[in-house]
Image (cartoon, rainbow, N blue to C red; front, side, top):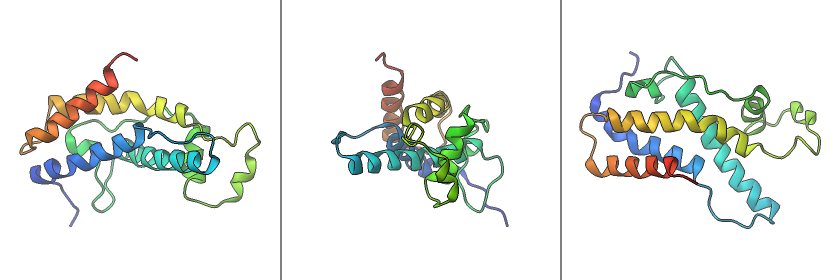
Length: 156
């Protein structure tokens, strides 16, 4: 029998969705001169970005995956350039010969470009959650979402 989330599931999973967004977009302070630390931070960010791509772009559920459509948000193709999408799909968690395609210029992670492509969809989803919160969601959780929305929409 296919999994179908109920209102209680939606309210309960909402903090996990928020966690993924925060872990993707809130870059911790780190020693940018240390290649290993910088790489670790970027990989963590990109793993969360990859997860969010699936969350927003997947129309049919595999087992008990959480989908943006569970919250009434339309499945959306994130306008991510093909090369960046390939990086997320082939270079994050796969050791493949396709890595040989990189040069010194293309090897650095395109974190800014990936987050820039994902950002409008994330902001629209946050706004959707605030406008259409799941039934039974706790007030404190919605406050976290409001704070997150404010952080995304405040002028730089």
